[in-house]
Length: 287
Image 1: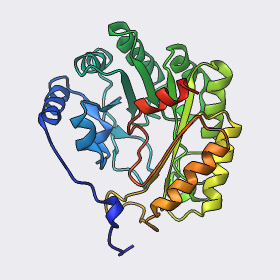
Image 2: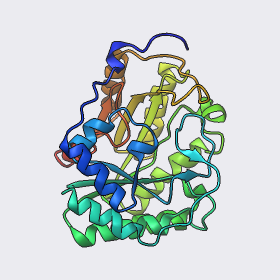
Image 3: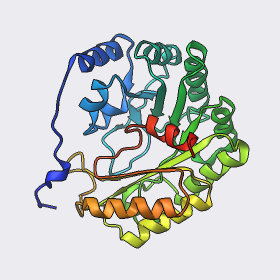
Image 4: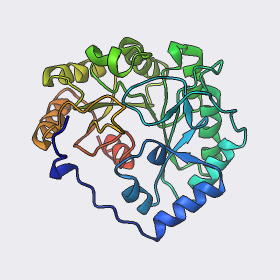
């Protein structure tokens, strides 16, 4: 797509002292953030608010999704000190809402689920009042791995479907749409008190009806919270941007999703899975 990026996708990058402090703290504790690894357009804003989404289990992913900027290839040894370091960073940043995600680690026996659980428990050990949101991979459909995360009692379990099922072969060739939906249902079946959340990117070549059908599928599987954002190709080697979706369409998606019963919906071009994540629990708890 050669069309120039529209005005509504232009981000004014502003750095401040908080941004510098967050970068230094993460470096000191040898931590990674999805903000940096995925080249998120909201990085400066979030770091400026002293928030970050921690990415655990290394920086190298075992999947070959064509939309993602995270490195693929030879995976790293899991750092046993990482749960403690994430908890320390969350405490030092004064987080009320901590978001933790990971690369996909199909090479590990439980996909890294036990490590997720340790991170959740460590965060809670230092501050039991922190809302913990985890954005997890599908663990290849392993229900016992998923239960390790559920048993650690995070407030929110997020798993993104990312795109419409028709585009999975091109965009998420190692993922299964039905498996992702079943993961969300399995969370609710195991613990109704945990909020479930998912997200989808648009601009990859999907139709509006396909997007709304994904909303319906998510609600049928008990999904509570939803994000919808514009896909931005990290490079010319990634899946191309087919369309820059107008903000009016995003607003229509938000309205349609709320009609279907989601507790909270963030739908706008620059929305990402963990952007302003604390607003989700506020909205859901006030429902």
